[in-house]
Length: 135
Image 1 (cartoon, rainbow, N blue to C red):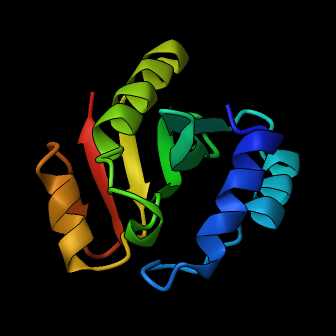
Image 2: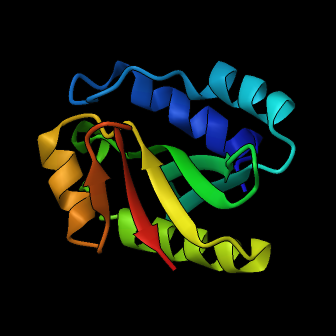
């Protein structure tokens, strides 16, 4: 769960030059939380340090689960902890609870990231700009 402690810790990420996307977790989370009450959120901690954040939600028809945002702690703030495997496992559990048939990763930032997700069994749909994995 993303709480005030996680959002405060994520503020330190804003100044890291190694961030690939400049998404503002504090304000962005508030808007996402308000708009999507059935959202799924993950805050990963390791040794008292925030190492990953992610948010997603069911698709509008409720047939699939979207992973909209995922970010690992920037390298400048400590050793990079691989977080996607844990986040993917959590999304899969939630997807099974919702009885959905597919997990989608929306708008991967670049080819390197897209190829990384593909190592977890995801397939890319160029036309729709998302990766998917059937459950």
